[in-house]
Image 1 (tube, rainbow, N blue to C red):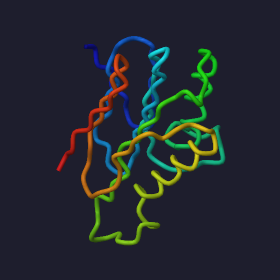
Image 2: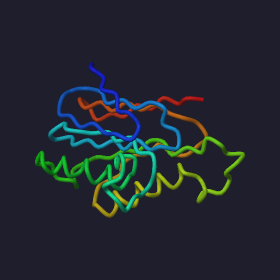
Image 3: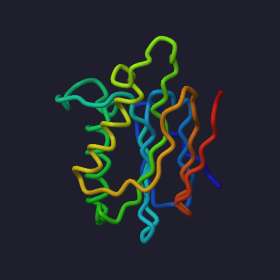
Length: 153
């Protein structure tokens, strides 16, 4: 099956039976959306929790702006946001000896931001593979909606 790579600070959406793949997910979060009825889905690779400005260089680095842009594109395609199945991956603390307090860790902050944004938008989070002190790679099958996680130690 064709694989489409999703780089850091970007997202991809497709209705084709492809795999969306993001590698090197450390403190970043991969947000995987899938509509089981239309088999349209998307994957965002976000780096940071929030930005108040949308006119900054590459706003897709930020969870709030990337998720907003993705969901706008889903709505333009006629999807109902409440029908989306969402899974998130990442949010690691790659330097546990330096940052022991959760609130200081970028990965923790990213995961909390994504969860809050999804909740505010009425989008269901059905699974997560987050935290820890290891990186991950993620693959979202737009044929099945299955998310595969590979741990990178």
